[in-house]
Image (cartoon, rainbow, N blue to C red; front, side, top):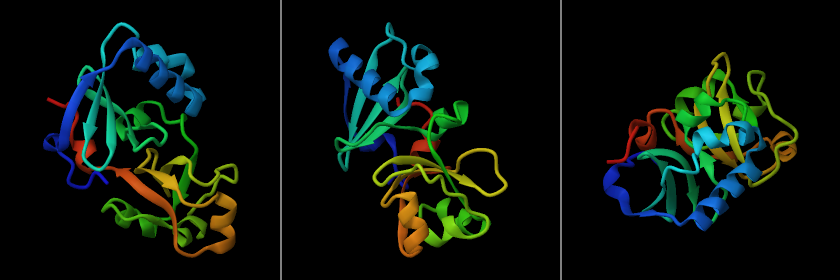
Length: 181
């Protein structure tokens, strides 16, 4: 999704009203309860919140021109990898084996066998259509953020096809864009 992403793809940037800012904060707090204690540090109430609309129905939430969250169409807000590395325990995690790492880092979706093989780890509480952090075997930080296509139980049972859509990964366009000018 962000493979060739750059600031030219941003079509509009709007500072949102206080009511919209409250809705965004509330939906992020509902999706990621682990962020509750640090919500005011991440999304301060006093600093302006900017929503940048991009191509392919993509919205970026910016504070001080730094992208913190993104959403596709009206889907859930997902943190950028930079934010996830600061607060690693806010999302549910799935782990891929060593063989899948290079494919995930080039933008490929995560296949079921990469999650069910001996190096992979599945969290059985992960449902279908939910945002997850993709960890790598033997690595400390997340290497991608994805959106599950099926539940963890189905991934284990079916063990074929795409299990997680790769939305944002290390060294893609959004990772390289530390600030939006």
